[in-house]
Length: 463
Figure 1 (cartoon, one colour):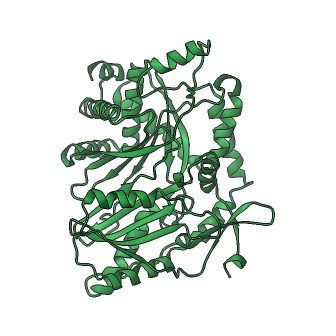
Figure 2 (cartoon, one colour):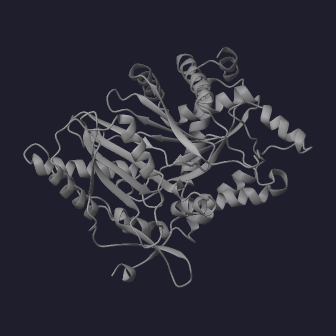
Figure 3 (tube, helix red, strand yellow):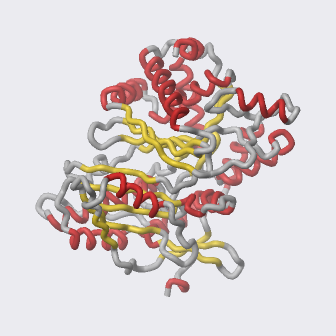
C-alpha cells in the first residue's frame, strides 16, 4: 500500500540534508536525538495512546523516501503508524549511563528508503522524571517540528487524563499541502527574482575566512600554498567526529539581553550574530566576516504547524568597520537579515554550488565560514504544553558534524535563560577553545548592550 501512495519530489530544504549525506561517510549525520521528561507520575498506557494520536495528526512523522523509476529520491506518506512504542526504564542506572544509551541511539543511522525515519521511546529516568526520547531524520523534521510534536503529545495526554483542566489541542497544518505550495516555487518568477539577488550577492566579491583560533592557521596555509591572496580555508584529512557541549547563561543576564532586544526592536539572532562576528573580527584582524545562518522559514501559522524540515542555511556575510557603533552595526545586520529573509526560499545548495564555481580558481574548494548559528525561541512552555509541570529537555550528539562548529541557542525551561549548545568537530575545536570563545562572546555582548553607542573597535580593544 505504501509503495502505491502518491509521491512528491524533495524540497530544497530536504535536498540540503540529502547533499550533506551524499558527501558524508557517516550516515548518522542527519539524526536529531532529544528528550523531554517531566516531574509527573506518567500513565504509560495513556502516553502511548497519545503518541499514536500525535502520529495520526503529524504527516511528516509518517514520511518515507523511495527511489522512483528514474532513480530519483521521492517522498510519500504512509497512512498509519503501527510500530510498537518502546519503553526503557533507566531508574537503576545513573544519569550519565542513561545519557550514553541515548547517544548510542542517536548515533545509529536510519535506513533511508522505504523505512520509518523516527523512533519514539518512553523513558523513566534515574532522577524520577519520566517522558519521551525522540529520534528523527533531519530530512523529515527540524527543531521546531520536534517541539510542536512533543507539545502535541503532551497536550493530547493531558486532555486524556485531565479533560476538565486541559483542552484538546487544535488541528495541525498539513505537511503535504505546505509541500505542494513549496514545490510551486520551482520555475516561478519569485524563484528567478531570488536567484538574481542571491547570485549578485555572492558575486559581489570573494569572502574571507576567519577562524576560532585567530589568523595563525590562515597565514600558515597561505605560506604553504605560496598564495598570499588565499581567502578560503582548506584542511587536509579532516575528521568529522563530533560532540556537543552546553554553556548556560543565567536567567538575569539572559533577561538583560532580551530586554535590550525588546527596547531597541532588534531580533535576538541579530544580537548573537554581531557578538559572534565581533569575536572573529577581533582575533582575525579583519572586518569581513561570514557565518552560516539558519533561516526557519516558518512565518505563517500553516508553516509553523506543518511539521517537516524547512530550514534553509545561507552564508551571512557582513563587513562592519571598527568605527561603526554597536547599535549601528546591529541595525546594519538587521537590514541585511531582512533582505536575506525576503529571498530565503531559494535553494541553498544551488547557492553553495554557484559560489564554489564562481570562485573555483581562487578558493580551490575551500570554505569561508568558521561556524553556523541557529536561534530557537520556541519552548514547550511557550507552546503551553506542560501546564506548569516541571520538565527537562536534552539534546544528544549523533557523533558527527558536517561543519567545524555549529551553535544552537535556545531558552531554558526554568528561568528562560539562554543555553548555548555547541556541536563541534573534535579534530579542530576543543572544549578549552569553546570556553575562550564563549567568554569573549559574553564580554562583547554585555559591553555592547550596556554601551550601544560605543564603537566596535573600542569594544574589540576593551574585551
